[in-house]
Image 1 (cartoon, helix red, strand yellow):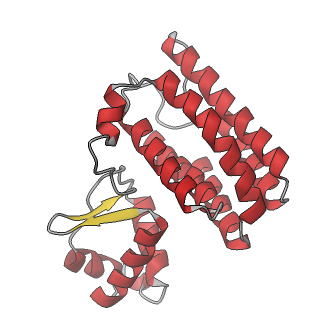
Image 2 (tube, helix red, strand yellow):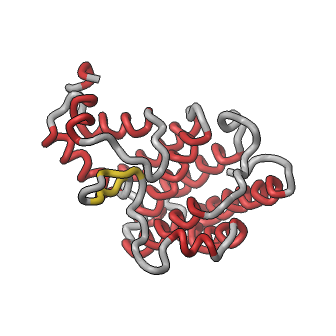
Image 3 (cartoon, helix red, strand yellow):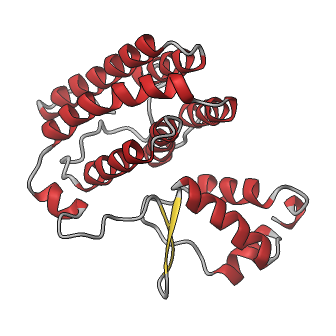
Length: 231
C-alpha cells in the first residue's frame, strides 16, 4: 500500500481494518508489520492507533497486542458471564429500551462530523461483500450514534450491551446467504434514523430507531422459527 503513503495515516488504517474484514476481537498485526503494510512510520501508526482507540474502534492490551472492537468488560460481571444468563430476546428488549433514547439524544448533540461518519457506515453496509463486513459497519454505525450523544455513561452502557450481544449464542441466526440482499430492511431504516439525527428531530430519531429495532426483533423471531434472516 506504499502508493497510498501520501494519504492521512488514520484514513489508511481505517481502510485497512475495513477492507481486511477483521472480526470483532481479532488482533491487528504487530506495529512493525502494519506500518510497513500501510507505508507509514511507526510514530504515525501509533498516532492513528491512539485516535481509533479513543473512538472505541480498537483496544490495546500490554504484552498481547491491539484488538478490533471495544475493550472487554473486565469485572466479575463481564460480557461472557452476562451472556450465559441471558438470551437473544432479552438482548433485543434491552436494545429497544436503550437505543431509541440514545438516538434521540444524538439528534440533540451530534456534530456534522458525527453525521458524516454515520453516512460512511451506511454506505459501507450497503456495499458489504459479506455478512461479517455488514455486521462490522452496522456495529460501528450504532456506536457512532452512541458517541454522538456526548454522554460518556450512555456510551459505556451501549458498549456493554454490544459486548453482551456479540457473546450471546444466537444459533447462527442468518439465512444461507453470503451477504445482505439489496433491499435488506436495515438500509432504509438506517437512512431514516440518520436523517432524523441530522434534522435535529429528537422524537423522529427515537421513533425511527424503535421501528428499526422492532424490525430486527421480528426477523429474529422469524429466524428462530426457521424463516428469514435476523439483522
